[in-house]
Length: 207
Image 1 (cartoon, rainbow, N blue to C red):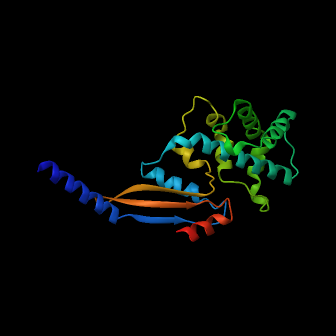
Image 2: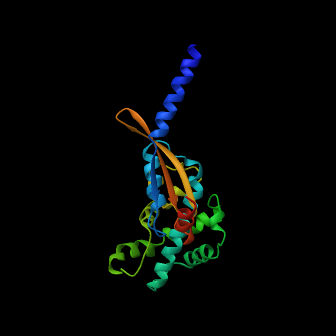
Image 3: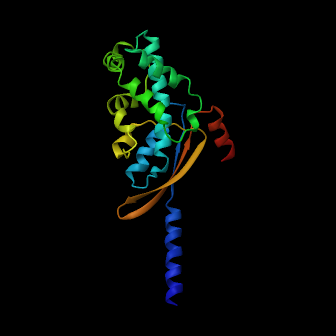
C-alpha cells in the first residue's frame, strides 16, 4: 500500500510539472545572438551542459578571427610581421573548421600570433571611426585572453563561456528547470538557427 501511494504521489508530481511547462521560441535572422543568449540563460539556471564547449569555442574563434582579418583587409592595414601574415593565410586556408572538435596545436599558434599582433589593438582602439566595419563582440575578449583560452591546461570558466559567441544552424530544443517561489517550472526552449533561410519556414510548417 505504501509503495503504491508513493508511486501515485510521484505520478501526480510529474503531471503537475508537465502542466507547468512553458515554451520559449527563439527566431530571427542569423548573427543576432539567439544561441548565445540562450546559452547564457541555460548556464544561469545551473543546468548548462559543457560537453561541447571546446567545439563551440573552436567555431567561434574561427568565425571571429575571419571577421577580424576581413576588417584589417578592408581598412588596408598591415600586419606587423611576416609570421603574422603566414598565420593569417593558415586560418584562411582552413576549410573544415565547422567540423572541428577543438583547435589543433599548429592553428592555435596561428590564432595566438594573429590576436597578439599590435594591429589588433590598434584596430579596436579606432573601431568607432569605422562604422562600415563589423566585428563580433567576442573579439574584445579574445584579444585579451587568447593565450589563456588556447592553453591546453586551461579549463573554460563561466566568464569564458559567457564571452565566446555561439553559432548554430537547424533546430535545437532543450529544457531548463527554473525555481519560482519554491516550485520548479519546466521551460522548453526552441532555438531556430539562422544559418539557413529555410529553417524557420520548415519549423513553422512542421509544428
